[in-house]
Amino acid sequence: MSTAVAVKPRGRFFRLRKMTWALIVWSALWLLLGIVGGSSGTSAASYCDTHGSPRGSIGRQTCIDAYHTGTGIGVFLIVVLWFLGFVVLSLVWFMSRPRDVVRAQPV
Image (cartoon, rainbow, N blue to C red; front, side, top):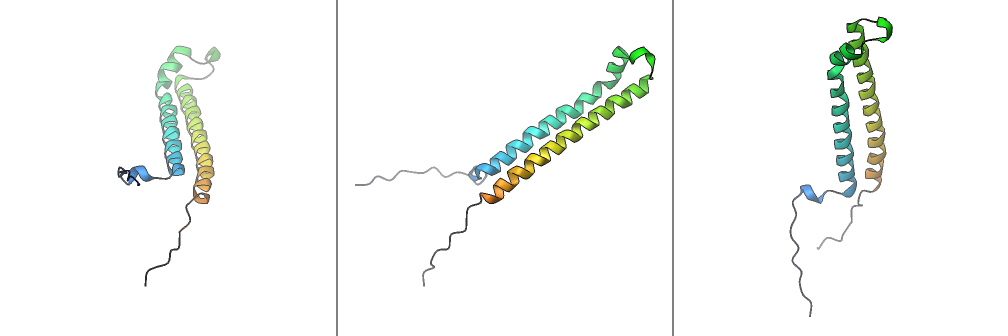
């Protein structure tokens, strides 16, 4: 005697492949990192007012511009690292796709 086990149907969204979830999580984490890294540049004025420049060699506006330039370079590096990881994960995603199964059609 066999007993039938009821399988709870799941929605389309939750039936994604594991590598799809890996890509989603990877992108979400790097997006969060990019937002946090980009928002660190908003405190440039207070930083330059507090710390100033060594021996007063640059003005306040130049200090703020340099601070924003460093933030931009940091965000650029975050985007580059995300893209490199995304390419690797995408290649794994393409290589691990399920093959189409050819079945005999009833006549």
